[in-house]
Length: 521
Ligand code: ME8
Figure 1 (cartoon, rainbow, N blue to C red):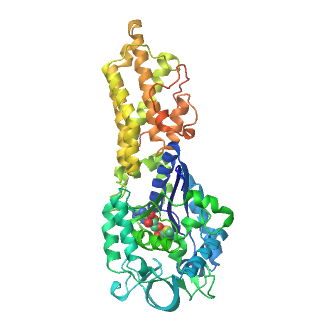
Figure 2: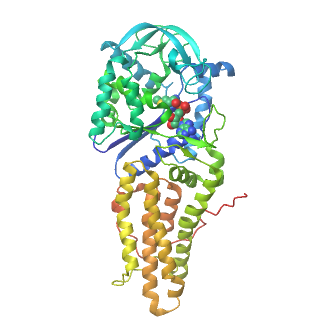
């Protein structure tokens, strides 16, 4: 990985249903980081995609009376469309049925085979098709999957195994040394204990192939075996950036290891135990960090396809708009922890933070600029700075570091709060300065100019720091301030330095950014 390379990924989602608020949550959170890191000058590569193999897909296709490929092809567009609608700026979209992926998976198996980490054996035990997970007798109670509660099946197969049990000590050492170095492999760190005790409990070798169906990537050295779907899926993180393709060796070298794998806490063991062990076995570096966030809950329950309470993002976007959607989930749910979501809290956030604080500030201010200065940025008179002006500059100057610290911690709420401190201050500043009174006399004209200039400048800066989460409205605020494309900013801290709003720039009023929503609508 080169210094500026910043590779981040989401899980690749199962194609057994369309995107819902849960899968959108991980994807939007990753997008906000990708956008922010582009604005801090990083060479970002943001990957998402689809997990298209496995027994579950094969069964779903059979029930639908189509081939598995036809089945996955019919669902894939729902994901690309949903991510497009949510303003997700992934640089690549991998589907595990693509040739580049299959080639990479086979290259990986050849490598592990040559290194002596694979052997043939017999598997007998439980399997949950919806979770695509193996379970031992002691994990299964009354034929129920310990993870999703649905029925498990008993399978007996001659499979290939990966010597996962060889890696317990090396994994524990990884968790420990990384934590000691202050760059934990598993985050939030509160989740590490669960993984550590699982590894300490002793790892069993892992069955990595299936023989009773054929919908998967064939093992290159053993006919009739297809790759176990989870292993197939994990490899997407390297096949997408060129692993196994000699023509892409330089790209792989540049991008790998990933900075972040964003996942939900449901799939932490796959990512924090099996995945790093696979990489170690292949002689590859492990990622910088696996971040396992919490669940979105509705009425106290995990939102999921299997519970039937999964909602699609479209209806919320229709009502609130894309930016408010993104804002709500990142502002109201503490990343890393479970969070309850509801229509009431969404309306409240929308009306309070977005319509009242941010949207209203822009409307009032742009209106006043038009009214008092014919819609052009007034010059800031020299030597008239008041304490209130100084304080605003101080809040604005502290914003870049506060925001950076919070985003480095993936603490979106605190990052947004830092931006909101500025927005709220400007609202109070305008209220106290009362430009409508200053406009009444020639004598107070210089002060009026100063107040409007300072407030516009603060809004310019606030828009920069809203942009990773609310890209559309931030771009619009910059347009209304007569500025260039906010998405082209590659040094956000330098762009946020005070005093860069060009005097005389045309300022336009425009429609309200966040029209108020009434509960009964
Ligand atoms: O597990 N709250 O795919 P999947 C928050 N294909 N996030 C949620 C959520 C909720 N209620 N529900 C789902 C798979 N998610 C595998 C991944 S990766 C190599 C293979 C998010 O479609 C969260 O990120 O079941 C979770 O980990 C993921 O969707 C599961 O997606």
